[in-house]
Image (cartoon, rainbow, N blue to C red; front, side, top):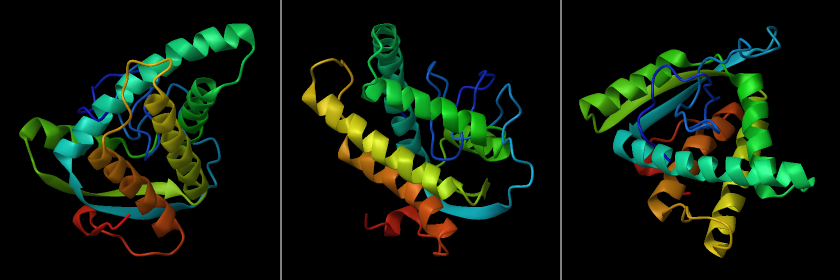
Length: 193
């Protein structure tokens, strides 16, 4: 779920994606492919205010656990030709990494440093393309679906995301969705979602 980012990982994910399928943790960063493929994409500033660093770290740890399990399940499902939730989630993570990787490495480093320093909160500004709103919606929805899959308990050791981490995850993704739609930033303590 949300452990501090581990520096030196091969893949970094777009804002809102907190980890990669191999267990690396980030919310954005650099990929081997160089990140955003459309250099003409207009970038927009997204102010994410009062990020609770400890909750971010716990969320990162939980997502790491989930994606490790989903990666193993997805590998088996790919072999059988089945496209179930684990395959769709891993495919979405790969798609978002390919499209949005390479953005916001400074913000990710600042989050890691804040976690290492034991800071309670941090404010960050992310620069993302306008189409990141639809990607954030897709990610929010599939992570909610993954929680339902975990609650069913038939295939996983990972438990459904605890309510405080769900609230954080939704707030974080909603900041991108809402601000890209013209809304104002909402600091985490003021989030009603």
